[in-house]
Image 1 (cartoon, rainbow, N blue to C red):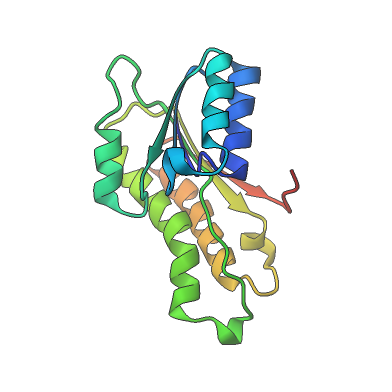
Image 2 (cartoon, rainbow, N blue to C red):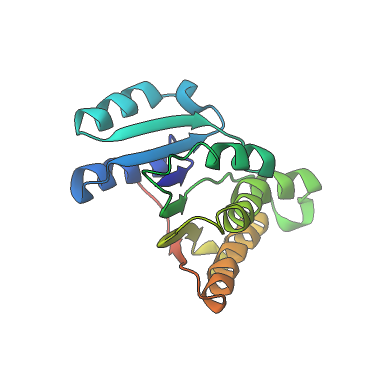
Amino acid sequence: MLITGGTGALGSLLARHLVTHHGARHLILTSRRGPHAPGATQLHHELTTHGAHIRIETCDTTNPHHLTQLLDTIPTNHPLTTVIHTAGTTHDTPLHTQTPTHLTTTLHPKAHTAWHLHTHTQTHPLTHFLLYSSLSGLTGTPGQANYAAANTFLDALAHHRHTQGQPATSLAWGLWDE
């Protein structure tokens, strides 16, 4: 199982839930800072205490070459069957002040990574491909046109995968509160 944004708030919460409530045992958690992310050491310890085999990897998933290198390290005795994309970044500003930087900051970790995951896992026996989207893609949120666009892309990618007979679920979360 691969979780992007795995050391972030959503990814780590999900990893804990999957290990403690569903018996997940082999997880790769990726983030830009990997094992150096705040709380990563504690997360690793907590999950291994529950019997899971955890790899926390530094990976720029917006870069297809880096993602391919990571995917190539997945052992054949524990093939990749589940991808969960929780990574994302917001860069809010009203629409009339959106710049290319606002778009790039938001689109790359959500939309580009989702596309790279889609294209670079074609040879893996996936049974689950989950995308953490947002209700903002459907309803819009003031100052988040870029974030809404990124999440709409995730929803569209899930639809595309379905038309290709591939597994996909896009979860359009509402306001998240830990």
